[in-house]
Amino acid sequence: MSATDTPSSYTPPRKMPARTAGSGGQFTPIRAEITVADCVIEGQLPSDLSGGFYATGPDPQYPLRPGNIPFDAEGHARLFRIHNGRVDYRTRFIRSLRYLAQDRAGRSLFPMYRNPSLDDPSVQGLNRTTANTHVLNHKGLILALKEDSPPVAMDLNTLETVDPIYTFDGQLPETQPFTAHPKICSRTGNIIAFGYEAEGFGSDVVSVFELEKDTGKKIWEARIKVPYVGLLHDFGVTENHIVLYVVPLAIDLEQMRRGGVHWSWDATRKTYFGFFRRHGDGKDLRWIEGPAMSGTHTMGVFEDKGRIYLDTEMTPGNPFPFMPNKDGSPPDLPGSYSTLHRISANLNGPNKGYDVEMLFPLNMPLPKQDDRYNTAPYRWGYGACPAPEGQPPGSCYAAMDVQTKTYKLWNAGPHISLAEPVFAPKHAGSREGEGYLLGVAYNLNEANRSDLVILDAERVDEGPLCKVRLPVPASPQVHGWWVREDQYPT
Ligand SMILES: [Fe+2]
Image (cartoon, rainbow, N blue to C red):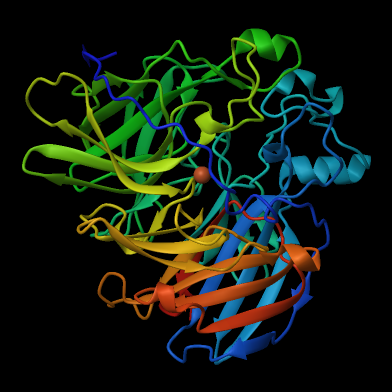
């Protein structure tokens, strides 16, 4: 491990949100594979919006065992295909090796989240991916991601599974963990990804690698070590640096021996912010120790005048109340309140810990950006959040300007649950923020019957330009991805 700097003394805010956007409907099991051709549209579908809104989320193939967590359900992919003024909707379960084995057996064979010791003997050693966290387009495919495994590849148009272990033409081992939050280089289009526990279960090694845009050829890899084996769900990439953060949701082998899940929240540990040169050998890695907070999702990252800045949502405690606390204490709901923070550190000189400041007082566990700016300085962020203080109760979409630290909100009302949105540029060359925000609204008063809402990203406060009405609830969603029309194979 590299040198570790001394901790800072930031005290994170603790406050109970009125209601968490996205919690009401987006994780409700549906289990049905749905196709709806030429959906009913209320309002005017923008004529310059063309592409596909993809997402995946956990949907139990078989009921979860008591004590298991919602994250351990099979990936169910969905697509809103927008083309020539119409919208077609399609969902398909992702045929991972786990899904196929359970389908043959007619029952659940993997009873506990990321605890293979309890797996049915018939599937011992089988890849356990659920592919239920995120999606990404590559070489005319949609890759479904779960951070403990390689991607599962699906057909871009049909969502049929074409490869249950996608190794980029054999370049990655079939055991290679692959983050659910790879970044697309803003300059080259390359994919930058990492995998933690890279040398086997419980390993403290993280592999970070870069794959060429068009060929998928691996052009760089570095292996580094973490201060302890904790969750590294997301990261940051700039033109010159890789940024990691390790949070106190740590592997708990004793809990696993008792039949529990992989992680527990260990409040005695610290959070580490680390960075090293991209395309280097990782030997320049620096870890900076800070307060025990959880940072789970990156909104954006950039460098300026010798400092590196990471904008991420952070919680003062365990971000997932369904993950146990190591000390046996009950779930700390105020501690899971997630707000957008900016972490920064001096790239060159000594540090007395990293600096932390709150960017926006919005409860937003799933912030997004215009994904063309993954590795470049950026201005606009987006996300779903409960209405902040002073607003009527409701679920909101926000467009946030990180330069002026102001934001605009659309409040969908108290009976709507909004899933994470995606940003769709009007075209490949649009300036940052010029485009649309697309998200799924689950109508809690209509048993989760859902609408795709489409807003002008520069006028979010004016509300949807149109709603694409589904006759059914949308499938569960964690994260989504926009594929532009010019990214489809001709
Ligand atoms: Fe995530």
